[in-house]
Image 1: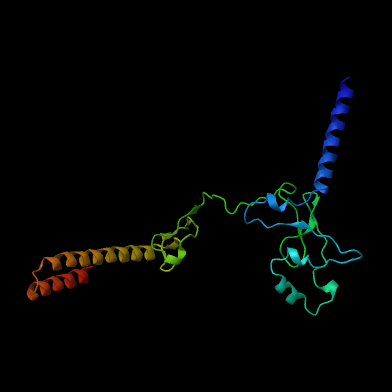
Image 2 (image 1 turned 30 degrees about the horizontal axis):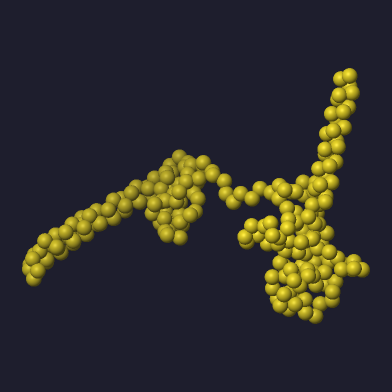
Length: 219
């Protein structure tokens, strides 16, 4: 009894697999009216009667017929398009289709050959660019530097990401950052002080300007 059930179950599995293979072999592109906006309409390529080579797609399916005609100019019929045969992917043979181009291409719909169409993966190892990075670094992904002995995480002018630099270079970079911050404070103090001088009070303005220069020279 158990053997009979196992035999029936195995037969059903094999039959289901055979049906699936037939369905995958008999697929056709979806109807054009069922496609979402922006998705190109594709139709199976049909060899012209008596033809033994891959020829151009029908003119009515070409997005740019004039461009195709210019491409084909002076070529023999069998030389107009690549003589391709479609490969198998995941056990399914692709088919020649026309989808707007001059010549057929190999294609299969996603429900026949499942495609992974992700554009990016979240990677916990990546970090944002350094805050001091130039504007053109926007959108890049950086890796957290792993520094050897004697090196520290630091920033090199013009780079997008932090990198491993010598300890001496880090200290110089930190000092430069501190000096720049002090200079900015000097400029901000100068602007505030300048606005407190009465209009036309040249002596007050000169004193403020002197104090700014003295402040920046110490920075």
